[in-house]
Amino acid sequence: MRVLVLGADGYLGWATCMYFSRLGHEVTGVDNYWRRRVSREIGPGPLIPTPRLSERARRWEALTGKKIGIHIGDITDFGFLLSIFRQHMPDAVVHYAEQPSAVFSMMSRERAAFTVRNNLIGTLNIIWAVRETVPSCHIIKLGTMGEYGTPNIDIEEGWLDVEHNGRRDRFLFPRQAGSLYHTTKIQDTDLLWFYVRTWGLRVTDLMQGPVYGIMTDEAGIDIRLLPNFNYDEIFGTVLNRFVVQAVSGFPLTIYGSGGQVRGYLNIMDSI
Ligand SMILES: NC(=O)c1ccc[n+]([C@@H]2O[C@H](COP(=O)([O-])OP(=O)(O)OC[C@H]3O[C@@H](n4cnc5c(N)ncnc54)[C@H](O)[C@@H]3O)[C@@H](O)[C@H]2O)c1
Image 1 (tube, protein in one colour):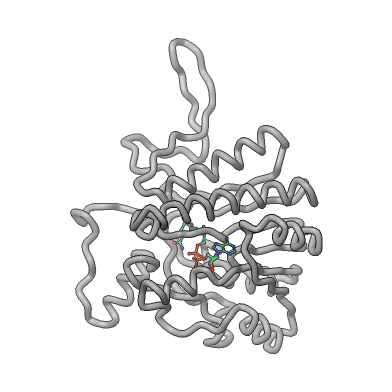
Image 2 (cartoon, rainbow, N blue to C red):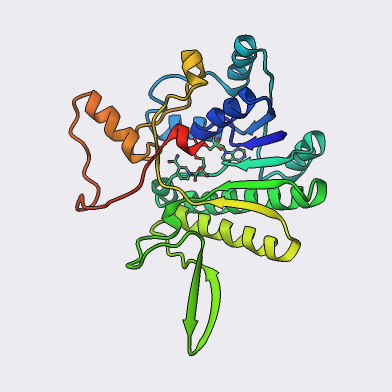
């Protein structure tokens, strides 16, 4: 299949590119290097230096003989995104290209506005690019368990059957996030679900918990193929931070009262 990975330079994006490439699919990756730039400007940057996406793709080809196409650009620029879709006509698009930090989204009005604009316009542009080029393209979108918040009833897989005043209906499970970032993920879900209902788009919107780990079968081939790995309080996910703190002999940071229970995924399971 022709697979387009948006956010290909990111923690999950690059590992996904290599995974599908190894399986023999024709993979194209897109990123605007936003995360790299910002994590160095406002934090310590990644744990180990990661070569740029185009260099990693060259390294991958040299080691495996498989080509991963790379485009550097911003998916909120519709002209740019449309040209990528026209050129590659993907069978599936994996959408990771978002501002993914809850902390970042809560730091200032400017960062809140950036998160809303980047995440929602990005998702809307993908929907329209699919509609205008390959309407049968399967959109795979990574949402988060954080969309559900922490309700005091069991969380259902997507849908909830509700009986009210003697009548029944099915709704998306109610969502109530605990950060602006998570709220934009809810709004993404609403956009996608609206266009599924309206245009019959094919979408898998996957709600998953925080990812941990750095090693995948493909990344193990060469240290320069490892994913970007942030461990700081803005871009590091919790278990990855704990691992770095444990290894460096730093006390583990307690979050809130320390009583949360969460489901975590290893990066290989996530991919
Ligand atoms: N990592 C996790 O634990 C986790 C858990 C649940 C959901 N998610 C979701 O998965 C997705 C990927 O997460 P990640 O940890 O790989 O994040 P990441 O920041 O490492 O990767 C996202 C990539 O997208 C790029 N990007 C952002 N906006 C862009 C734009 N407008 N145009 C082009 N590129 C853009 C960034 O530069 C970055 O390289 C995010 O949407 C995140 O919300 C991640």
